[in-house]
Image 1: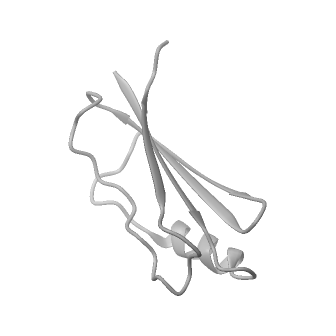
Image 2: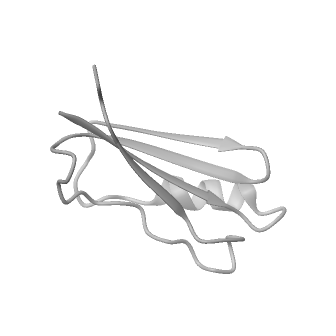
Amino acid sequence: MTVALMWEARAVEGRGEELLAWARRQELPVRPSRRETFRGPQDRVLVITWWDAAYDAELPELPEPDPELVSRAVHRWRFESVG
C-alpha cells in the first residue's frame, strides 16, 4: 500500500522563502520513496512524502518549525492510494 503524508505550514508574512528553505533542509531518519516540496500563496509551504507502508504505520514526519517562523500550527494529513 502507498501512504502519502502531507505537511503544510504558513509562514509569518514575508518569511515564505525562509520557511521554504527550512522545510527543504529537514532530513527524515528514513528516506521516503518520494518527496516533493511546493510553495503557494500567502507564504504557504507544502511537503508531501510517499511511503510503501500500511495506512496506520509509524512513519517519520517533518517537525514543527520555530514558532517565530509560522503564523499558525502546521497542518498534517495522511492519505492512502486507491489505485
